[in-house]
Length: 416
Image (cartoon, rainbow, N blue to C red; front, top):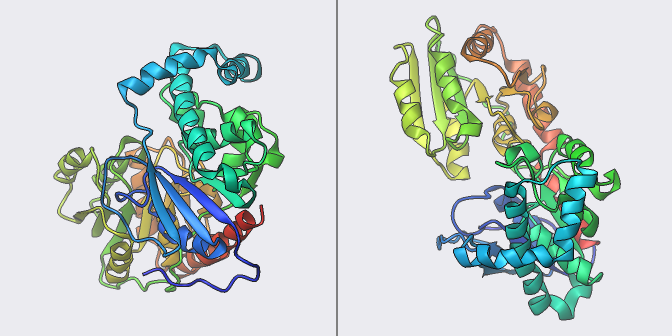
């Protein structure tokens, strides 16, 4: 159930239109489950426009939220329609940005990516015009990602200055290197046609200013957060060192590296629990079969947030591990720290903004199985991790509390 957060000190008389990748359908974008109640308190009405992802399983939303869908699927007809975009002034401007501002050569992959993105963005801009043109003075448009929905809001603003829009930036929607063609379309255009771009990490802002070539004044730091203040869990004193990790089983998360590292440790009793599923599960299961008897592994699959928290309270982990090759600031790390669980993580993206030597340890992205094993063994051999656990909980409370971060963010959107 969604509960009332707090009474707002101002009159609720604005509408928020929130574009999502699929939420509340399916199981993705779980972070929005924490943010949405604050948005619903700040606005009289929230309209969630979800991209049609084919999933009809719908999660609960607050009473003043209306859910709609928009079809932005990559169909053959859409790709064919996108070809007419070569005559668009926005497309020609993008080619100029790539060449003269990014100082890069234009590849076929970039052209295809830009044209499809523009076609999808036009659909969003048209949707805004058709459904909200008469109430722009009281409406704020918010794209949870810097994606084609954000481009659509930017296009709508370029056609009508009364359109007020913002977006968040996370990881894949920030870093060019995360794209197969080393390029993300229309970021320069989006940067100058939205009221503000909110980054979940300082690293995201620094990257966007440097690579998107957008003035720093267009960005603002707005961290994600979770509401889960139970205080540090008390690890069990039974000679078993308990490790937990939580992520999709996909290449960028490199969960198999944890299994590889544990093969190097034969002198400590370790129980490793991984939460999450994905296409690399079979590969991970094969690696797990090679571990020695001193290592116990639990692959529990994907769990709802509530069950993740119940698991932490039950097993009382000694250490959380994240070895991704790319990150924004993982909500999974915030969740672990809210329970006072020390964190061992790769120094990528915004990880260095939440993990430090007081609450855990940062390791190089280029770490191998032996170096990771050395770091894990070092943590197992520490006599007392109490101070580290307290520091982890304090870091969450100071910078990643949902009640603080989302209240501030929602109030800012309300006042645009």
